[in-house]
Amino acid sequence: MTRLPSIDALKFLLALGVVWAHSVLMGQHYSTANYLVGQGLVRATVPTFALVSGFLFHATGRRGRTMPWLMIMTGAYLVWCLIYAPVWLVGEPDVLHVLGRLVVGPLHLWYMAALILAVLMIAAVLRLVPDPLAQRRWLLGSALGLALTGATLQGIDFFTPVDLSLNLYRNGIFVEYPYAVLGFLLAGKIERDGSDWMPGALTLWLMLGFLAALRLGEAWLSLRAFGLSPAAPPEFPPLAMAFSVTLMMAMLRLDLPGWLRPLGKLSMAIYFLHYLVLLGALSLGLTSLGTMMALGVAGPILLTRLGSAIWREVKRHVRQRQETGEAWASPDWRR
Image (cartoon, rainbow, N blue to C red; front, side, top):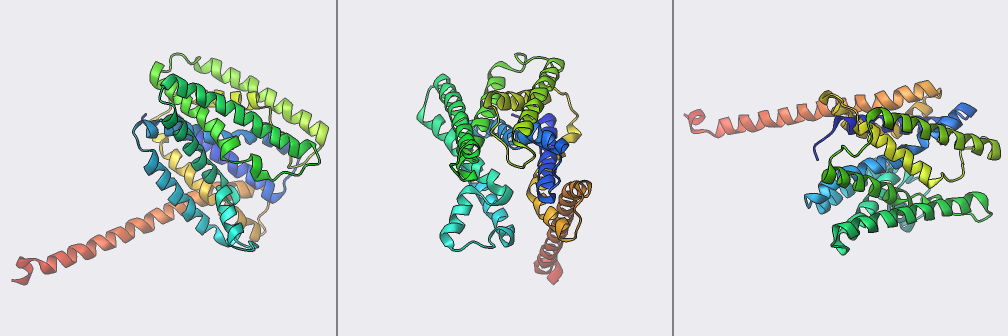
C-alpha cells in the first residue's frame, strides 16, 4: 500500500494529542475542561496510533518483511531507551529491574515495546492459521477478547481494593494488539474490496461527531462519579474501538495533497523527542500549558531539522575527503 497523505496527517494530529496529554499531566494542569477533553477524546490517541501501525504493517507483512521490520523497530526502541536512560534509569535498584522496565517500556517508550509484541502476535496468528478467512476470524476474535480482558483488569484495579500494576493492562497484549489487529484487518478489507464499501466522508464525520459526543458524555459521568483525577475508569471498549476506527476511515476519505506526507516523519520526531523537551521546559520553570505545548511541538521539529542539517554536512565533508583522496591516488595527479 502506497503512502497516504491522510494517514500522515492523522499521525501528526495524534502526535499533537500525545504532547497535549503529557503537557497536562507533567504540568499538572488539572481542570474540568482538560479532564473532559483528555478522558473523552485525547485518551484515544495511543490506541489510534496502534490502529495506524497495524494498518501500515499489513503491507509490510504482505511483502514478507516482518522480520526486518521487527529488527529495525527493536533496534530503534533500544536506541531511544539509551537516549532516555538518564531519566528512567534513576532509582532502578538492579539489573533485573532494568530488564523488566525494558520489557514493558520506560516512560512513553512503552508504546514501542508494546507494538513489537503486538506485531509478533499478529505474525504468529498468520503463520499458525493458513486459511485467510480463518486468519481474519482468529485475529478479530482474539482482539475483541483481549480488549475486554484488559478493560476488566483495569476495572479491577480502579473499582476494587486489588492494586494491579499499570503495566499489567497497558501493554502490547491488551491495548496495542487489539487496535493493531483492527488496523491490519481494515487494510486487508481495503486491499480486497477497495474503499467503496466505506461510507462517504460526510457520513463518517457525522458518525465521528456522534461518537465523540458519547465519549465526552462518558468522561462527564466519570467526572461526576469519581471527581477530578488523572486516574479514570476503563473505557467502554466497543465505543473506544468504534471511535478510533471511524476516525481513521474518515481520514482515509479525505483527499489530501501529497505535500502533507512529511507530516508522518514529523509526527515521529514529535513523539520521540517531546518528552525530553517538556522535561527541559519544566526545569526552566516554563510550566504554562500553552508554552509547554508550543515547545513540545516546535522543539522536536527544530531539533530534527538541526540534526538533519548536521548529518548532511558530515556526509558532505566525508564525501569531499573521499574525492580528495581519490584525486591524490589517480595516475593523472601523480604525473
